[in-house]
Structure formats: structure tokens, C-alpha cells
Length: 363
Image (cartoon, rainbow, N blue to C red):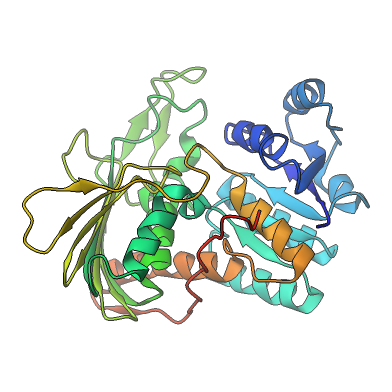
């Protein structure tokens, strides 16, 4: 299988695990050939640690003949601009989530990619880990019967107490739904299929936030986006879902995700991780049984999605963390906000294929 060559744009906090995994557990399938960042010191640090060339700007990286896939891990408001440049240059691109900030940008990106016959992929790839892949097999094998409903909860008090540069989480393209919603919604679509319509209520709990982490301790952030969102989702399969995402909650006792079926309940692990634990309660049992994980990638395996994409390019099959899936999730998130503003259901226009189960030997 051909090894795909990756150029990384953006060397912020999340880049560390990508660099570690793409030069480590996934190095048989991919090779990082260049990196770039607006902050030169970051690039020089990566070059010294990994012996990967640092190039001065995005255009130079994209033009390099030894870059097949551009890994775009810039901040959300830059996702479209960087991805568009890559696609126009005839390069495949894999974005961090969300795919783009707006639906219009995402649609244009996918149209351009189709015209240039290149692929678009997008995080999150946690749904390809052993935890949610095991859940998918349990559902497919009928362990909880026919799924009737799902509930998902992502609630904390935001990023300003730990993240070194948290302001963008409270600007357009951020907020709890656009930041963490992709993990939950991608997991739900992987388990239950695409979403047909949504409703929602969204509010802003705090008008400002004060950073308590270094190096910006004491800086005040003006909040521009909703920070507590409650949504309902009607899946095309007939299942009904509930989702709450919030940066306004100090503590809670709710699960990450539960799937309720005609013959039992499945408790899904944190969709921001690749492993477990996961639990099943079947029929009228009052106790829960922990289920062993199947397959590989139970540890932090960020980079799994772009590696699957690289393998798919080499052998001509569909990739799983696809632009189609990410575009569907993006529309669902915007639809929830639209429903909150309008007071009526939002009918989701995009669809997507339920990603194939990840085979043990594919990567």
C-alpha cells in the first residue's frame, strides 16, 4: 500500500498528539513531510524534535510536491480558507472539526473537491476507536434490539480555566455545540444513521468570561455565541435523540451517551476518547454488564481518521471520517441554532452514509 505524505498547517495545542501518532503508531501508512504555523517558534520546535521541515507559509507547504494530504488544524474560522487553497492546488485535505464555520463554506468546499477529484476528510475520528466501534457492533448484532431513542450530554464550565488561548471557544465557530457537538453527533450518526430534523433552544449563560489560565490570566473575553444548547433530533431510522451541550454547568451526574432499544440500553463511553468503558443492561435486568472492547485503538489515537483516509486513497475505497459526514453534522448544528431562533423544526437537507465498521486489518 502506498504511503501518503502529509503537510500540517497549524501547530497549536492539538497538533502534539497528531505529530506523536502520525510519526508513531501510523507511520507505516503516512509520513509527515512539512509543517507550518504563523508562530515561527512552534515550527522550529517541531523541526528540532521530529526532524520535519518547517516551511514559512501555507502556500509554500501546499505547493510542495511531497505533500499529498494537507492536515488543517488551524482555528475554526480559518478552516475553509486553508482547505480551499489545498483543494484548488489539487491536494486532499483533512480538517479539524468543524468542517467549516458556515454551511455555505462547507458546500463550496465539497463542490470544489468533487470538481478537482480530491478528497475531504474531517475530525473527529474518535468514533473509529475501540469504544464506539464496539458499541456499533453491539447495536448491529441486536444486543439492545431496535434503537428507539438516544440521550447525550456534554456539560462543563468552559475552557478559560485551563486552555492557554481559550478566546476562540466563545466566538463564531465556537461554543459548546460547535466545539464538542461534533464528537457527540458524529458518534450518534455512526451508531444510528443520519438525522432528518432537529429542534433546539439556545442561550448565553454568561456575557463575559475571565481567563484564569496562563499566559492570559485576568483577560476578559466577550462571549458572542450561545453557551447552553438543548436539542432534540429525529433520526431517519425513526429513533429520537436528545442532546445538551453547555459551557455553563459546574457539575452533573448525567452519562455521556445512552442508546435505548427495544431489548435493552447501551451506555456509550465518552465520544471524545477512543476507548471505554461501555455497559449494557438487557431486558429487565437491574444491573449493568461491562463489555470488553473489540478491535484496536482504545488509547488516544488522533490521526486515525486521516490514516484511514490515506489508506482509502491508496486502495480506492471510501474513507470514514468523510467530508460528507462532517457536512451533515455541521448542518445539524446550525439547524439546532436556527430552530432556537425560529421556534420551529429545522428540516436537515444533507444526508450521509453510515460509516462502515473499521476492520481489524484495514490499517
